[in-house]
Image (cartoon, rainbow, N blue to C red):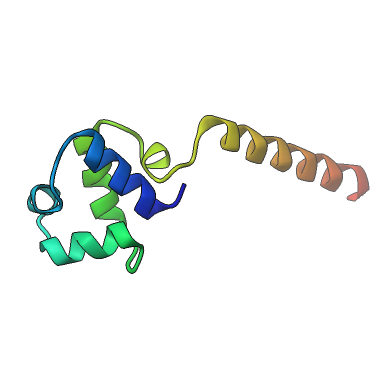
Length: 88
């Protein structure tokens, strides 16, 4: 899921309009619309406000789930193990 898809999904689940979400964020409706269609990525302060408003983590908001984090953690462990084996 892309950031735009996540923003659209959460807004629709909460039955909010783009204008209502934009007001909460303190941005123009057109700016929020650009986030939802993927023309512009929201800055981190906007993502924080959105995650707080929807009561979710930023990772969850933008489509990163627990499974993906586990895979990344495992990859990092493998890379660290590879470094320690050959790095004398």
